[in-house]
Each structure stands twice: as C-alpha cells, then as structure tokens.
Image 1 (cartoon, helix red, strand yellow):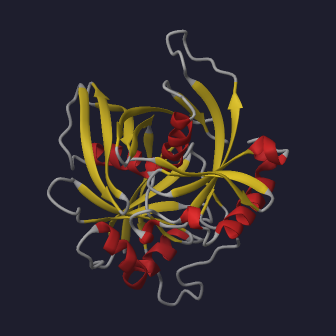
Image 2 (cartoon, one colour):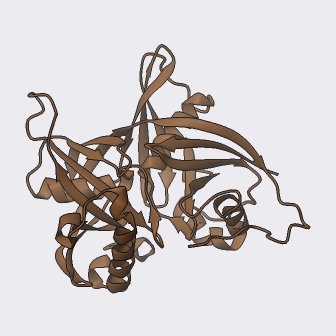
Length: 326
C-alpha cells in the first residue's frame, strides 16, 4: 500500500507520497535522485501513469534532508523520470508541512519551511492568518542567464537557469499565442526545440553536469498590465512551460518563473513579474537579492489540498504499474 496527500498549485497537480516507498540510498538529495530509478521507479510509474495518474501528473518522494538545517528533503518526479527542481511543488510542500504539523507555524505571520531539493536548498515561506494558510512564497536557488539567441529548430531561444535549465521563446515568434487552442502546436515545437538543443554547450550546467540539459521550454507573451499605480516597473506575461517529453505545466511554473526572472532582470526589470498560466492561474515574482551566483527570485502562489489516497497494486493485474498514451 502506498499513501499520498495530493495538492494542486495553480492547477498543476502535486502528489506527495507519505508511505510505501523503498529507501533510496545516497549521502545527499542530489545523489538520491541519481539512485532513485534503480530503487523506487516502480512506485513513480504506479502513481504517475494511468490508470492512477496521467501523462501530465507530477509528484514527489519525501527523503531525509542533507543536514539538520532543512525540514524536508524531496525528489520530484513526472511521467518520464526525476527532475532537479519544482517551484509549484515547493509551494505545495510548504502548505503540506504546515497543514500536517510537520513544521510549527506562526498562526498570524510567516514561517519558513526549508527544503533540500536536487538543485540545492530552497524555502517555502508560508503566510498564515488566524491559523489558516493564505499564501506561500517559493524562494528559489540563485538563478541566472546562460545564453541568448541560441539557434534551435529554426528559432532563437534564450537559455536560463532557475533550479533547472529552461529555453524561453516568444510564442508570437512562432505565429502562436499561449492559449489552449494552440497547445498541441506548442507541445510539438517544444519537442523539436528540446531535440535540437540536446547536447548543446549552452545547456550544460557550469558547475555540476548532473543538472545539465534543457528540462523545459517556456513559451511566453506579454499581456496588458493591470497592477496598481504604485507597482511601477511591473510586467505581466502569460506562459506555458512544456517539460520532460511533452508534459504541460498548468501552473505558471515555479522554477520556470525563476528562470524567466533571470532573463527579465538582465533586461532591466526591477519590479514584479505577474506571471499567468495557460489556465489563468497567477504567480507573482520579484528579485529578493543579487548574489555572485545570480539573482534570488521569490515567487508567490498558493496550494490547495485535493485529497488523501491509498493506492495498491493487485499482483494479478495484467496492467501492472500502468501506461501512458503519449
């Protein structure tokens, strides 16, 4: 039996596995990510694939943190494997840790839930009022621009890092908009771009090759701003992030937003990015600081619990750990 607590952040699912995962060896979270396929991939498939999940499912395994400075360690997964970062998942983990009493929270204030992820140490700053979670801010690892105007599959893309490496491209440059009616075409473009960028020098992480490779393609477009007058310098954009092999993020994508903030900060943005998803959910991001490694983005959103589940696998079930149709 495998138990989970499920959330969504901006419409994007996040399945937190609370029991039933074999021990995954490793001295730190990044090493555990390397070892996870050999020890717990059957659990990932069972929970992510149909009939218990779907091709756009997302979740995590809780593991020990790297040291006592963090509350949780986590391995993020999707239908094709294990990722290095997940902002929408970190937001959900912050809400989960407070809801379940894993971290004692200020009933009327902010409490940091510290989480070790494969790309480093991040924070979920949980804001409560009257004992109720009202918002969560994801504080990312340092994020930075890697390369601009990289030629790929007939397009020019900007490559940046926000805990994972993303390629950003204007949807308009492809004659498309970030709308559900263009989603199939955007997914096809994302697959072509990822294939074209495979092994490109600009997709190499400068310090740890285990973090290399384009994880997602972000299609973005500008929207008219409607922020109050005192929010000078803010911009509003809509995006859809297509990650792994054609998986679509329903949220504005947390680590993708961090990667976008690195690009926009370099372009001169000093205010807020109001980042809208393809389903209309919104994150608000700003730069909290600048370090030698890059900017430190803070991305505000909210996660909501959707259910508690007990999953099992009948040994006689011919479908076994499931399937995906794309």
